[in-house]
Amino acid sequence: MSDIIPIISDSNTAAAVSPASWQAVLEFFPDPILVLDQALHVTYCNPAFQRIFGWALDDIKGCTMDFVPPDQTEALAAKIEQLYRDKLLHGFRTRRLTKAGARVDVVMDAALLDASQGQPAGIVMVLRDITRQRRKERSRHILLRMSGALHRFHKLDELLGYITRLIRVLMAVDGVSVILLDADAKQFYFQKASYIDIDIARRLQGLRFPVERGVAGQVYRTGKPLIVADYGRSPYVLKMVDEHSNYETHNMLDAPLRIQDRIIGVLCAVNKRDGGFDAQDVELLSAIADVVALPIENVRMNSALKEAYEKVRQHHQAKNRVIHHLSHELKTPLAVLSASMRLLERGISSPDNPKWRRIHERIDRNLLRLLEMEYKLEDILRAGDDTHDVSEAQAVSEEDLSGKELTE
Image 1 (cartoon, rainbow, N blue to C red):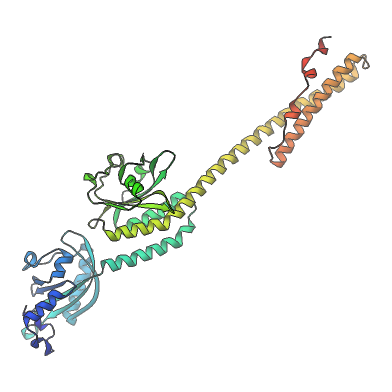
Image 2 (tube, rainbow, N blue to C red):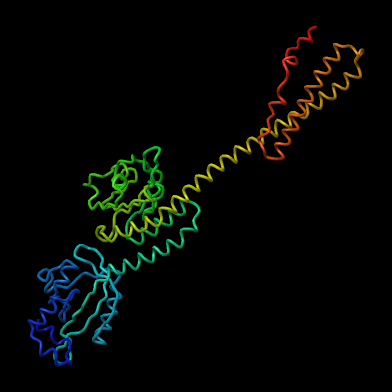
């Protein structure tokens, strides 16, 4: 511990503090502290370092710490040069890996340890864990961004595609799915999925499973979010989904999509890349589910109404085509029959014969009815109204149908 004391070489304070007091301070310090020698080998770490990163001093003493993510090595090299030049480094935001491989967002402060002849004896650094803070900041930003954008989507697939992509990036997971409830069929179905491998999402699209099965079924029954840390050994494992998608699920988090006292489905996140899901992930996914549940239901209902309207519109168009065809088909024979009647009137030898007069009146009466029906069909086409009753024009009396007088 005596190597740590000369951090403040130009102060008389350090000399007045015993090594035991310094050790007590460092071990009490709530943020991780790491001390390296000239060769950058570990000489000390405090309990907070073990608590957050997972390594005890006996595990790493005399070793080089290899806990820098590959994407941070270039930035770290530049900051080390700055440290050797300025002897102090403040507020360097970076990331480090834990023993389990999880990423931790940190703010690093560092200083050179003094030695004789102006040569540094090593480095002491404080790594303040800001992972929760950063995640909360990102979560608030995403929720605000999502809330402001949801109203722009009028198609369900576009809305769900936007939601699932944001969640996948924000939570650093392999895949996110929106699984909706078909209450009539008592089934869940994959309405939309976003995976790193787009083929997986395509294979999941529309896949159905019973409402009582899987993690989604448990969430639906309890109304509470659920973390499954080891999916393969879970009682809620649903092998048919992994087999259908040709994808292996390791861990999963599901949160209910709730509208008042009704659950319309679940949000499902699978295979978190940096460790497992935790309480903060539950809080985040639940908050997103609360924000998006009502817009999802509104867009889904709107899509169903549009689909129903389209069916009615197509039916209406088909009806108009039938009416138009019927009207067109009536015009020509009616015109021929009318002309033929006029010719018969002129050519008949005894127009005043009572028998002929009755036949003529009957033919003329039914021609008028057919003409009225044709006129009403034209009115329907013009008005787009199918409430007209053509049955009256189609009806004829039993006397007209009997043909009795024609045989007399």
